[in-house]
Length: 280
Ligand code: GUN
Image (cartoon, rainbow, N blue to C red):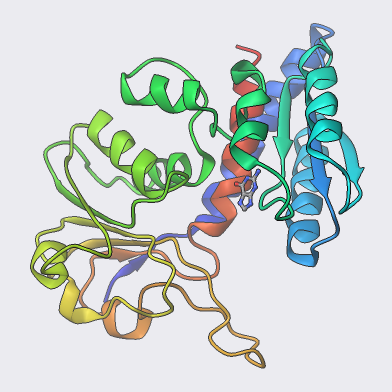
């Protein structure tokens, strides 16, 4: 039987720490402000954006909302980013992704001042992470490090296998685990023997985007298993599942994150953490 890593309660701890920091800043007359931009009205994006605004409210930060029409242009969005970059009252700028098809996302990300890039997506921040400099780190992988540390998982010297190599999760995750002195392997769709590699892991981090793909045959006895996936296995199902087949893996793992309530809540908590830490 594995211990369950409670992402909901750890994310609340982090938001409460942010709230304390914000109130200390307020005593000195310093405000913290996040600008959130949504283009179009994708319902899933609207839910995320609303949750980000609610988190700002919870910690006592200001949030400024910008809603652009689905058919607005790249130039309009870039102009808004330029204005927010130049606005001294704005500490963080977040453009909710994905953008409608006619936008060039890379150009949009690069336009955000790296020192306001609370998502940690700008190439400057990716570079800072890879050479161990201070900068904003992508929220989901940063949240996973917090989950591990606050669950007293020792990382140094451990075999860590990351399955998935996305720019937002897999690659920064590998960099962060390396920074914590783990021995890191990154697997992807062309990995020859995924079973063999995954079974080496003391810490297995799964971000492949396939529902319940990783079962017990990929997991070493006593491994710590972190599941980044979130899926609705069929359209009518109310229950969510991850990339890991929880029922099969849980008996073998020493610690595991559930879906929902594991990695998911950490992303917004770490966004708040990035926002507040921009003031220190
Ligand atoms: N879309 C899905 N996840 C994210 C995220 O973490 N940041 C932004 N900006 N867009 C997203």
